[in-house]
Length: 141
Length: 141
DNA sequence: ATTATTCCTATAGAAATAATAGGAGTTAAA
DNA sequence: TTTAACTCCTATTATTTCTATAGGAATAAT
Ligand code: FES
Ligand code: FES
Image 1 (cartoon, each protein chain N blue to C red):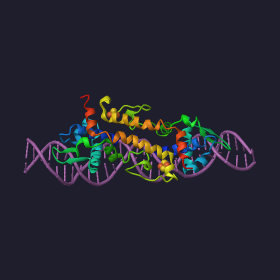
Image 2 (cartoon, protein in one colour):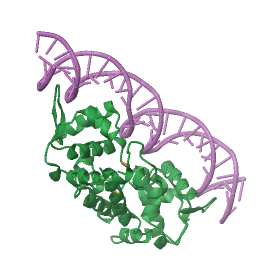
Image 3 (cartoon, rainbow over the protein chains, first blue to last red):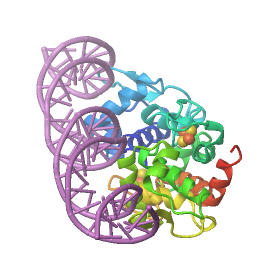
Image 4 (tube, rainbow over the protein chains, first blue to last red):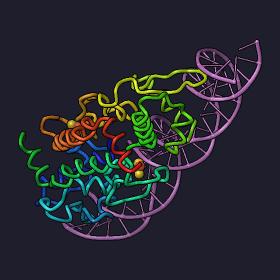
């Protein structure tokens, strides 16, 4: 289970991808995505610090994707907010950490299960681009 | 990311599957898996209440799998401890719940992504039996 | 100037996580 | 029949994470 925060982040990024030509204000995104405004602000700041968004201050400012939506993936967004997608750190590529309680990692059945889970998850999250998400959301306009 | 609790549950179930012939005490499992004893006790109680384990009280008592390890899956264990494996409830089969903030679920790109993620995860977790986990852990004895 | 924005810091309640503690009840074996 | 090894039950607690909310300073277009 992912947090609301990650879900809102994905929604916001999808909305931005679907309006790639314009800069959207946090207010606009909050309204379109039914996301609590102040919470969204914090999320957008995170995404900006992680270099997934660019921001423009002042009147008619707002947020825009840092790169073309075809080159950004859902996995990146989730990692930016939640950290590694592997169910256990011992199975993570991006945030590996040893399990104190497992003597032999190579022989650990739980780890092997989680390595496979990570791969399965990654095959979905790291292959789906924001462009695809935006396209899907416009199937029913 | 899953909780320590779920990880310990998987380890405990794997240990039990690898010693299918005997009844193991919580102490024994705690030692073999390097799991905090009192914490493990609570976990085993959960697994028993969810009918994944059978317990025998008193001297030479302990815990044993409720069914043959070939017929129990990692997915069952995780669901018993963590609840649904879908990243969002709107994408869950076992614990479906509507998203308040999404107007049209069918057109929601985030949901579609999570439906696919759930399927990918399930294809690993619901296909791996405890017997397989036990076998793996004995590759290096 | 005015207004619409991002940006920054601080706060905070609620829930989940990860245990620990102590003891009551059960059962097999000595 | 005692005793030791167990499960089982009920609390308690510290820490962290989640999910926001509040208020105002900095910035930029008009
Ligand atoms: S090595 Fe991480 S669960 Fe065993
Ligand atoms: S319906 Fe659940 S995220 Fe949109």
